[in-house]
Length: 406
Image 1 (tube, helix red, strand yellow):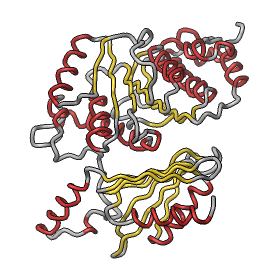
Image 2 (cartoon, rainbow, N blue to C red; image 1 turned 120 degrees about the vertical axis):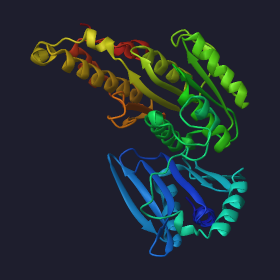
Image 3 (cartoon, rainbow, N blue to C red; image 1 turned 90 degrees about the vertical axis):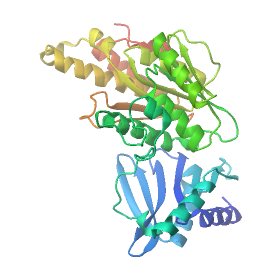
Image 4 (tube, rainbow, N blue to C red; image 1 turned 90 degrees about the horizontal axis):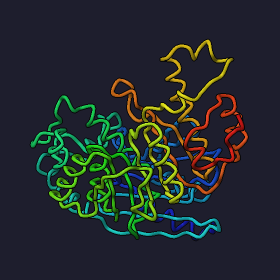
């Protein structure tokens, strides 16, 4: 990267690094073995604003607090050495920085609807005597993407909130789950485009708590051009969700009744979501996502019966004779192989905790971000399948050549 480009980057960061900064996030790392993700936000420490940086390296997270000048230099260096993409968001402006393989820097900027929020908040602060420090306290309470106290219409109709914006006590776990899901969406924003329509498909949407939240966050809050399709087998549920979508004026949120395996309603998808799709329905959704070339895959699997019914190994028989243990082993290996197959197809794949175990046992989320660099893990997958004498559906759909001759 040339010096003039570094100076351009430092100038952009200088303009965004202030108390109204909502977030800076980096994506598309150039190397897999170094820093994989970085976030930056303002905090208030010892009477002044500093900028806290979170670095994600493997399974570890490192924090550092920088002055504005230090942060400008540090963030520009990240784009020079470790990342090709950065998204910046304040109350009133959005920007995206792209760096090509040859080092060419492209900067896109536009104002957001949040400018109204700046004025409203400034007026409220003046009237109540609040200052910036009250919003940027280092040890602040848990921040939810959808905050309690502000009524969200679809959450009210779905029974999660009261009309006053208070979370219904019996639905607090669902409220946390929705916000946790939106945190994952927040992380993948750099993968979506502000310049063209992003097609998002939610397979097995059910009552669509998370589908509505996804649309509301991306379209209404962040202003992304999106078209979201929710698919489920239950006709009455689809009819109810369609009525709610029309009531809220969510014109680009549609619901269809149908089966994941036979769905042919779209020719492409930028993001595929599959939450608690039962057993091999998850595999069909993942396979469609890969064949569409989806940039983002978010999957919370459920009921991994297939592997449980297939796996055999004399060496492991002393453990497998216990049904509960066999069920858990089957679930872990099913999702592990799914992640390995996605990596082979060019996705940078992570297995993350969706929500704490005390809220739901279905707490594993598979996240795949398309990188185009296929992992050479064919022999590893083949040997594992041979060990367990298993032929899982996702391998049959995407990599049948890896199936061992059992």
